[in-house]
Image (tube, rainbow, N blue to C red; front, side, top):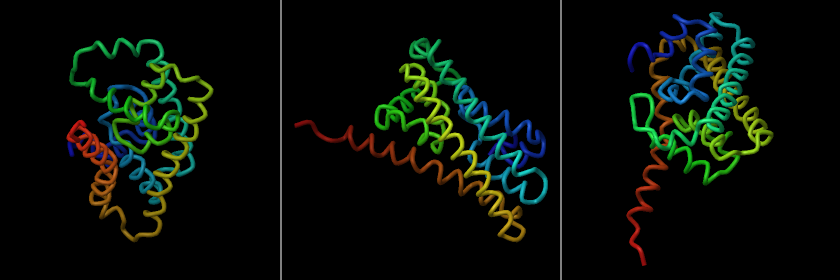
Length: 204
């Protein structure tokens, strides 16, 4: 993992304000898809268990940042989203990410806003796709609040719990982060194999 994406390095360098900025960016700004959301939240919770951060301020701040980020993503998609489908790929933008989020949205509907929180890349583009599809805002914000609270709350509290219960948990931090990243990739790998299987089915 590049040093600038290492959750431990990010937390030590940027502190609580930096954590909130990253959570906000990954939640709804299309160029934030590469940021380490899950592992960052978990690591921040673990740091809080060691007294480096206040767990209440961390959890509440991350919930608010996650909800605000998704709301910005929704408004961006609603106002300029259609233009995205005609854009060329660049370092920060790949149309396949929009397609992935669109497929997720087509399958799960409004629940995508909650479920996508736990799927890297999809969580960044799901609110944008909801805006493009002109999901009713009161529906969006309800699922947004639920999803943001569950994701940020569960991840930070899980990290705090592990740090509190496991002696010297920080010594195993890199292994824990690798495990979180591996688990977060499972839904993407599953969907990829499922889609590949559908394409391979012969037409009758």
